[in-house]
Amino acid sequence: MEVTPLRSKHHSLQTGEVGDLVDLLGAFELQNTVRVRWILELPTPTIRLDLVVRVEAWPFEWGEQGAKPLASASVTCLATGLRDLASVLIHALYLLDGQLAALEWERKEQSS
Image (tube, rainbow, N blue to C red; front, side, top):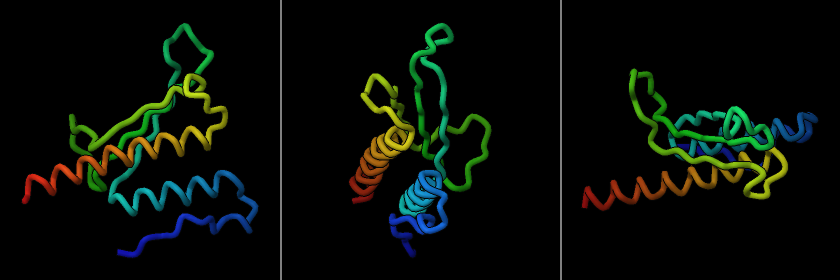
């Protein structure tokens, strides 16, 4: 399996932060063999001062009704001191990666 480097190939195209995040997410999905779903929501309907970002890792071939993600993590932006969306998304992927690594470790332990 070929792994895409995390360096941006979009920088010269002037797509800026969005292109960098596309590269990062693509490399993450390829490395972990998952699809990542992003969910952005307000913490509660009445409090609109913060944003909760939830990420879920799904197998590439998901589609079953009632299926559950392989792993999930959430970040409350301002509560963690993260002020820009790129930092939030990177932090969320970091948390998700830790869960996926623990899941893989558990699978290896069970197969031994």
